[in-house]
Length: 346
Image (tube, rainbow, N blue to C red; front, side):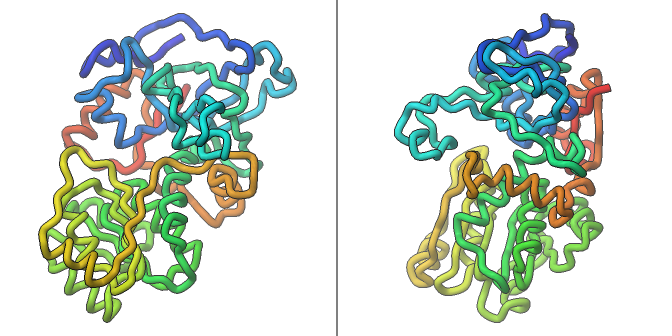
């Protein structure tokens, strides 16, 4: 099969490799689409995968083409989204269904081969079958959309809440979409990239601010009088972390979601804001995946199927495996605007 294989940091090769073979409890999935995540950029260019060679890519969906031993053969031909985390299912966190906190997990695209390929082998437990009306491209965005709704759930968003999102990348925009569907009273988006803010406007977000040009705290106060009920840090920036504390209202909630590239520091003023406002800070990591009602993956697919969440407008580029490395470099260098980029199989 054709695949993009990471042989070393910065050395991603489009080449022919052996087809994977499904083992016991696994299927072979023909990849229909796989999204480029923001984390794929450092993974390819600075951090590397956990071993080499490895095929990156973890935001994927496709069609089952082969069933391994002890797998129902009737699954062949079915389209599915793939939960990329493969938990041990033995540790204390797995025993209570908190798989994102597994102590000994595997992970498609970083610890084992992922979705930047024609085929990938996947445990059948990690498949979530796609409902009617949802395309494979949309289903490939289940992972970031589930991460977005998980972040909102950490702080218990309520109807009418005034929300501030710092970072207007793909997941920040998905957080905004979820907030609108949830009944937020106001969704305010902040970034320092005018192209991202223009794109957000085209998606019908009206309350936007370029914090590199405007006084963010004054802007939020003007729109809310007392500050935001809920602030989401979705950029991984120390400056944005600081702004979270200064823009949240008294007794407000702050969710820290952005994955930082370096140390995150707070000024004395921002730290005092946490104390004096009695802010509640929440961490968020990955998403909830299970077969019970709280599964954010099933929730995401259900909302896509009903039209309550429409992720299609977020897609700005589609590439084949032959153009994938150049597109990753473009995202790294910010040489061309993009929002959600998908590898789409031919």
